[in-house]
Length: 142
Image (cartoon, rainbow, N blue to C red):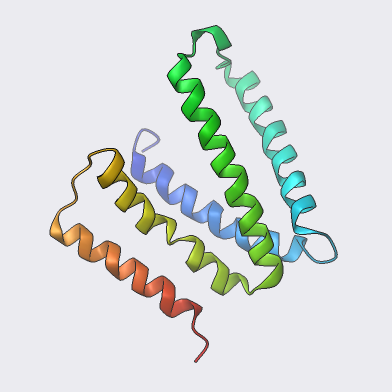
């Protein structure tokens, strides 16, 4: 089970949901950018411990330059995403912000098809469209 991508993807979804709930409560009385900073420091500390415990540190010289470039770009995108997410949580309801954030699923499917050459079946594209519609519907307060 620990070698299954599905196991880890479900774990990601559970922890992402907890992130929204914990962050919404934690944002009370503080700025969203400072909250993002605190979150980042906690993640850095946790990863330092994890790499140390598992002995999986890697010498920077062993990382190819292309990997460095795309990992740095990914880090910048992550930081921008977190700043936007925490600002949105500060201003809106978690039950509305999180579904809009999950439109990233729709964008990943589109970007993967365009930039990575991944091919989705018609059924998968229908599912992607349903995710988009569902995310939008969850933001409506009727």
